[in-house]
Image 1 (cartoon, rainbow, N blue to C red):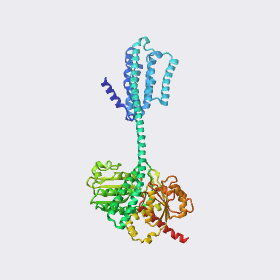
Image 2 (cartoon, rainbow, N blue to C red):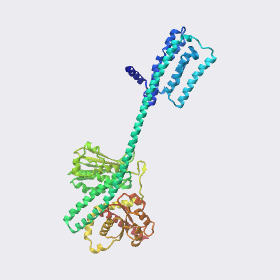
Image 3 (cartoon, rainbow, N blue to C red):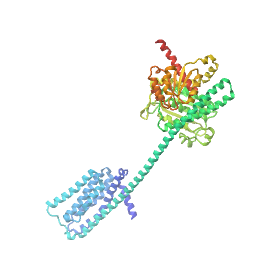
Image 4 (cartoon, helix red, strand yellow):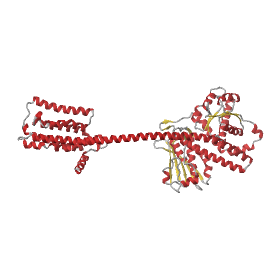
Length: 638
């Protein structure tokens, strides 16, 4: 029996068109259609009996037999014309209606034993076509039309022909009843199988919905945990960077004093303290940047940048880094690098991270920085910055997780070279924020090549307009960035110049600087740093008194912290800019958070990130003195 069912299923599978295999509901209806048409003619064996018991069977019995055998033609027609399934189903129902009513007309009329088959007609029609509106209307009219024709013939066409007396049709009636019952049994059995499978399907859906609900709850818990982690990292980064202000600031002051006085032993110790503090600050910054990216709170600050000048700046800053392990540093520039519109700070950070890794893992080798501008596939230019080295290289296994947070090549490298494993992950995330990516090619023992691929403009990243700076603020920030780079490279010269100052020169203040912060240690540190630069410093931890102080002392500039209790830095700068006496005073906003865009919106002169060191301070003062010199001719002309 099972073998017979297997063969039947194979035969049905052969006739099922491929168009219906992707839709479970349609496929089940088609299989029902095929089963009924392949097995249905076997239930019409009573037609053979009629040929024997009817003294004059021609032509009505052969016509009835032909109508029954025609059911075997429908699977073949479906195989040839699968798109005509609905039409074939309607014709099949009509053919069955004809066979039933034709047999009933010739054998018994309204009392015919064949008329019971008419009850099967709507059942099959719904199995074939489904329960839609147009299907229901079509089936209803088919059934009613057949009955109407049959009733009209019975009422107006005279008496029915009597080929066989009813009392002699008992055997035919039994066979007809058996055939109808078997036919309904087969169809009901298959329908029960369909219902059971649908019930199992519904139970499977319920299980999946329950699993989905559990996964959704787990996802929400994970998101809450991730958000809590990001908040914790941001708060801890704040708490760590606050004491780093003092560590780095005072170590730098002591280091400068030791260098001026020639205390060699103390210089080495202070340099170790400063290097350790800067290393810790770098790690804290990376963790904070990663947490901000994961929390979706990182913003872009694009500006127009001279690409060649950016490469020159990176070269001057990175050459000592490459030379640390006696590596040769080679820079190659393509023609027509032109201008780009990207977040310069994030681009520098990504390139510095890659160069730092190359310098760390290459000894007595060669590091190449290759910058090019190439046409993109979409017709827009792209920039490629390649950092190639002939250092340790990376194995294919290690490359799979190379850009994951806290991932490093292997434990031996971590133990030898240190590091947190955040640099590459952070760099790739920064590039992806600007619409690009970082690609890697490497082989163990043969060096590595990291390629930064970016569009020349990130004004439209992910379909959303990025933050666009005004020309005035972009120029101000660019001026500050250039001043910062100059301050870094000119630090040694300034120390020598400071050592040659006479006491009279040091006693002459260049002007008043007002510093506003609620951290007393920061105020003391900033006062000492500014005093070394020749400025008279007024410090306050009361933001409410800033306006009165500014009116009284008329400072050359105001250094204003953002995060303060009560009135924060934004409230204070709004008050200063709305007052005629203080509106023109340059205001430098200070914060451990990246608030550059907001500082621009509040018309701040520049934004300076904490911790504040002498390099950043000198850059700010340099840009302040430059703006003063530029404004003097204007005042003379007026």
